[in-house]
Length: 167
Ligand SMILES: [Zn+2]
Image (cartoon, rainbow, N blue to C red; front, side):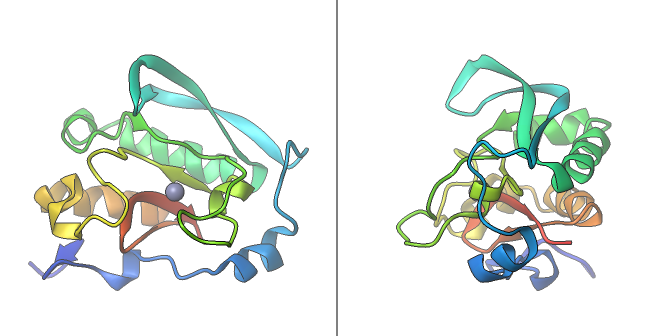
């Protein structure tokens, strides 16, 4: 396999986001609280809330600069229903949310609305990459990660539900 998403329990570095909170502040300014910089995108395929699958998600609130790439990425994914089903890409777990990183004092990228969490139960925080739903489906995971990368989204080594805009 010449290209990969996870190998030897590590994520391919090209898919990893290394932006710090300071990087994000420099680029996007102060974090957003109900700001005019937020907008909503329509969800292009049926999504539900990850922790309450009876709750349909039709719109996602995000930063205006991320709206087009995020909508385009999801529209691209829409064409692969098998991938959506196997990887649980219909399980929305949050985008804009003014909060600190889990267990840390820095603000999360979610405070700016520039990251989306997908399938939080299949890709739990701090889970070994090989034990996530992405790790168990290497070919589909590679396809998914490449789509996200194409639109400017990268993940975090121990937070594979998380895709953050880096362009
Ligand atoms: Zn996240």
